[in-house]
Image (cartoon, rainbow, N blue to C red; front, side, top):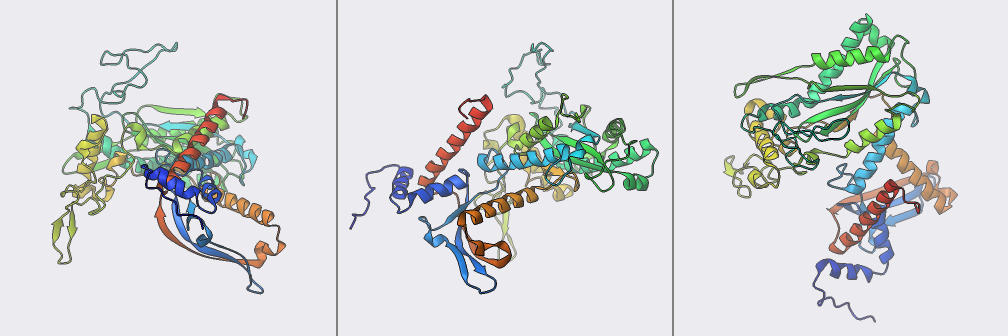
Length: 483
């Protein structure tokens, strides 16, 4: 009999756990699970079983149980789209977004390739100014010009995007604009259809019968902490991407409608505390046609790659934190209601409602002030529905980072279903058992959530997987001849 493993001399908990895993009967399976989730930062641990049964005889053809795993559980990906949270899952999300956008531009994934002949624009809608900020302007030759403060800022200067005069900067307006950016986009799309109909001399009903406006958009944070939207806007026939729009529905007509709708879209926010504010788009409106044959400056591939890159980004790219600041015990309220109905001060957060003090956050003073403004506005009764205290770490923005109209192209869910079906077919082919045909079998599964994350030793293995993946991606980007 083998003597029990004595790890008391190993000081590192992670190394001690790794040695323990290496002495399990099937260490290769431990590594295989971590490789299959691509080193996911915080995988979901499941326990349970699944059986494949013959529907005619009710006999078990194949079975699996986590009890047979070396660690007693199965790892599956967390699915987080944020690159700051999980590089592995965000990489897959970005790839799916790329194919979704590309299909709406070039065809594929149930979209006909004739869609590339439809009028298409790449539009960028920005936020207005809430006060002058430090910027970095360059000439056509690449020479850096002086900022209004008199300095020539380097590209990585943390002062870029921060106010020249923080005391007079409109932080309230900036946070409220972020909070209403999604609603402003919805109003823009409404006016876009109206302006297009008016420009073409049609009623709304006649326009809807003749064509459809399709789009896909993604939100990006600027250095000053405000979001702006990049959107692909396309004209289709009334049934969607499978038929072209009328010949009189041109790129020029769509361009006119985008400009008019951007000027017309206005949201009015009224409050006793701040008065009345009008929220509009900024003056910087960029509208560029997308080349139909892939030989122009803005091609299908470039647009899809650009949108996919920002689909995995979030507010942390503007210098804020990537986690909620609500106290988990009182959900940000600062108090807990006892069984007697009375409100008791939340002890873990000392009644602040914050999981960590805003004053102690390792962020720039400009970002901290936006977070504090969002937190304070969120507790005003007139802004309660915005739940700004919940989204304070997002600087007030609470909309979807990427969205599309129904008939733009395929969906992320359809792409995941296709990938799942492909993996299932590969597994059946590898099994080489004709009785496992899908139409004659029934899969019965029982799963239960156990925990999230790795053990300390598994985290070392996952870090190695992530490191190797990053090296491979870097070599591909640099054109390594060995890959």
